[in-house]
Length: 150
Image 1 (spheres, helix red, strand yellow):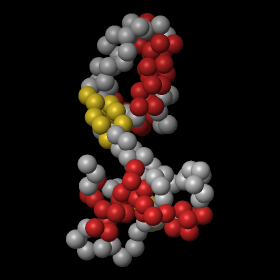
Image 2 (cartoon, rainbow, N blue to C red; image 1 turned 180 degrees about the vertical axis):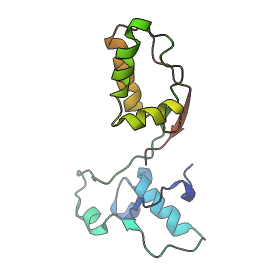
Image 3 (tube, helix red, strand yellow; image 1 turned 120 degrees about the vertical axis):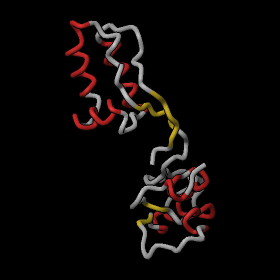
Image 4 (cartoon, helix red, strand yellow; image 1 turned 90 degrees about the vertical axis):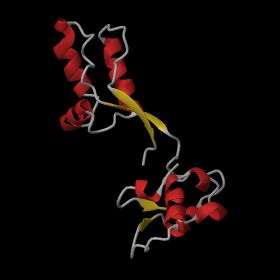
């Protein structure tokens, strides 16, 4: 269940609603807008929003570029023991390749400590690194969680 306090600061809302958008019931932006409009808390003075004229201009078969699915994804957290099964002679190579699975080295260290979730795509890239160097075991992460991709 998504709550208004789960919506990140500065998130883009979509107020088009079910009347204008067939995917509003599964779109995080539309869900966030509905939660905001139903909230009994004081309303903010301004919010970032998808232009309703843009949504209205889409044909029935067009896909909205602003759509964000509310599907729960399987994130991993922490990689403190990920290299335990890696042979010593491959350790340096594997570590550098795993670092390359992230957009920057800092993200690697945050993910390693469990401070940043590891997306399903990043998990797949790490698994491909292990497979490419001949390691048959799948990488083991510290824990897993389900969350939406805001």
